[in-house]
Length: 466
Image (cartoon, rainbow, N blue to C red; front, side):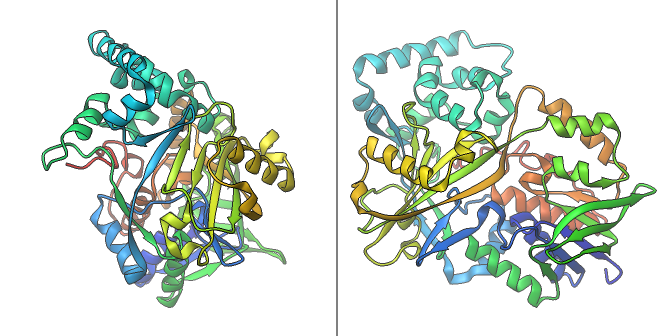
């Protein structure tokens, strides 16, 4: 182990977990992060003593070793918080997970009967083959409920028609749920009933950034080296092995050698960073993969939190907003006393109309849409700012499997290169699965044989409990 020198690319949850785990094992580890802060999309941004989570990151896992790391890093600052998430549709709030009485009252008796008939039809005449998101959800909820509660929001998130989104995404993210399990859960709250969604989760006292800032500090204290504002530009290889990375900061360019390399950078950029360059078909495959971006409009409010939710899914097609985060309900320490904040989430493409809009115009858009939804008194908003996060969500379109297979086949030759995390594997993982891939990556360096691509492929639905 003392002869190992691990180069970690990226200081998000996966990159930091790999660095932290290596340092604990007394393995030399160097982590390079292109940004000026750690945490990746799980960072916490601060403004005037208000803290904002970029997307809302629950700390919930069925993986004991990941949960042990989180508790080990934060201890008493790892709070257990209640969850209330609702859907806002047609001017009405609907509990999520669905509750039979709430849905019936909100939709009305005739719509509810229509949904029931549609569900029975889906059970009697399911769609085969089940290739896309629309088919997958319709088979489990019926087309009418899919059209009511899934279609608008999903197309906001991905910027694609639901018929263009692969069924694998639904299977990974909402596996195990059906209209039947939702109704059973709503009607029979007992020990044997399926609890389709968790109703509480852990959360760092000062937001997810606190977890990863503390993890970085502990990794460095254990001997690791961490360099912010250092962007890995190239990975140099020879004889089927990576042997060095070229890194630039604001002042110069350096080359750093290592025995093993862990990449959490977007797989698309990894491929274009290899030197010598991969074959053209591999470059073309990487160029065909797409990531969806996230833009948040963060509002500071001069009154206590008025909404009871932790977050709200906005299914109203008349606004561009996709989701609302109420950070005082995630942790009361995220806002000053008697104040509140909202994070308005907009899913977009890098370079599109939303992405390129000025911050001033975006803040006005956020205020306009939140007023249109009649959720808070917008006169109490006294400040706001915008955060843009590129490449947040890998797009599971109809061609991505073929492109990923081309890339995986090419990368198999590099025996000392491990890919992990959401960006690195082009996989819509939660934090716990990203961290698990990082732990496995370090174990692979120490002669294990984990298949990192299989993490979160066959597991039970992430939030379903018995």
